[in-house]
Image 1 (cartoon, rainbow, N blue to C red):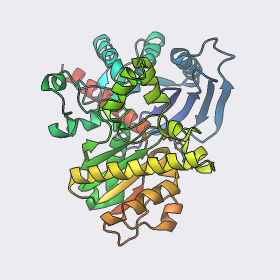
Image 2: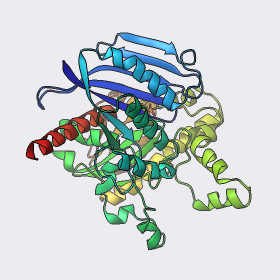
Image 3: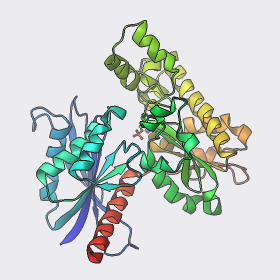
Image 4: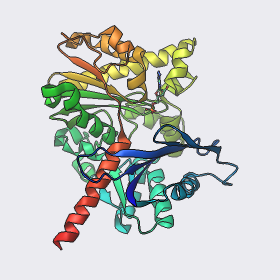
Length: 405
Ligand code: AMP
């Protein structure tokens, strides 16, 4: 019987899962046995599962199987499907993507009752995401109480940033309470950082900016493959324009919405997290593909703002790094949209980046010309793999501790 680890990534309206076989030696790459997702939670939930070879194992609507489908119910359904499909394997541990680790967690951690209450205390910092990660932990604990669970954080990778990059210009007692810049998408940046030597060779430890451009979007400045600055701050609202999130906003706008427009905090939160960004500016969709296909002027304006905000924020990270050696684009838009990559790279031509149009159309991996002083790359992100590796590290740490006791 071989050991497997399960990776769960609970987002705002979807839950992704992947099962990896635990290799006999650390030199062997992790192999994914099965993966799947439940999407459309709260609207029209659907379940998919796919085997390693690409064969579809399941595809069905969930509403017929479960009366009220919230995250907990969706997760329970996924587990009910998974457990019999894992026969012949032992589930050694589960890894969870948890959006916010606050200042407490700079590394993955084994979930205990006290860790769980610390994660709950961080819910106000990521109201759209944190509760779903916690629901995943609870669903697992209910069904498989003896299986160790490991929480892996989107904030942890950024804990290497210098103190000045983490500070807001607020009174120091508020910074002391934890009101500071945390940064997110850290599991994605960790994966890209691990891949850089393969693509950039000796330059991988130089000044690199990674653009994670998906439905959520942010930039991260790396030096020595460690985070030194990022565009997201206290919450995942800050920085770039996103699918439905506003990105950087003068805080005076929030005061105005509350004072002059008499909006409640819940209404402001819903506006900034769910009705702004590409969706709010275009009035058409949060999905870039839909906007690119639209002939509405407001759709074009939303794309213009998306690109403009990337270019503006990129300039500020170049300043934080003192120059730029390489730009990496990743996630749904970064990996797939040649148009957005072309527009961003052309706008920063002044930095010395020369785009290779044919390589860009072919999705890279190198999309800058051979003689470009700044190189540009398309590298696929893989947060699931980072979590699976962290789970294995944690399991072997525990085995070492038990042996030395
Ligand atoms: P993610 O959150 O990483 O899954 O990325 C979702 C975003 O990627 C959505 O805005 C999609 O429209 C966008 N996307 C995915 N594929 C493409 C594509 N081929 N061209 C343009 N945008 C894409």
